[in-house]
Picture (cartoon, rainbow, N blue to C red):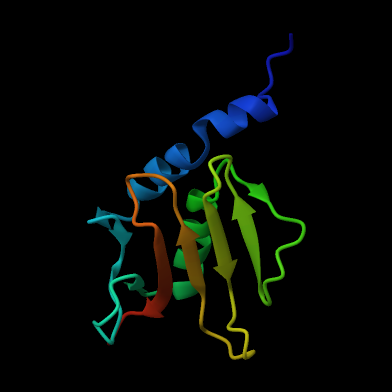
Length: 128
């Protein structure tokens, strides 16, 4: 019938399409975006350094959540959760749960082989 996208076709490209869109702007290394966090001890804690953390966070969020359904019951303070058909989930927080600003982070729980099962990415201002 009509020429629009159905829910089914939205799910079909789902997380794989979101990963590909995001990888075109943010490289993946061994299943992770960004580089290992400051402590260097936990591989899944990542950082992306940029001149404008807020803009980079918003760009990354728009790409990695493409094709997901926003959860109505996310229970996330200062953020939102998106769910894909395969059960993969992305949580985007623009502020820490402690209420301090400047702590944008994205958490990814992935069932796709192109990414690690879990990673948390912080968006940091590049050192001067």
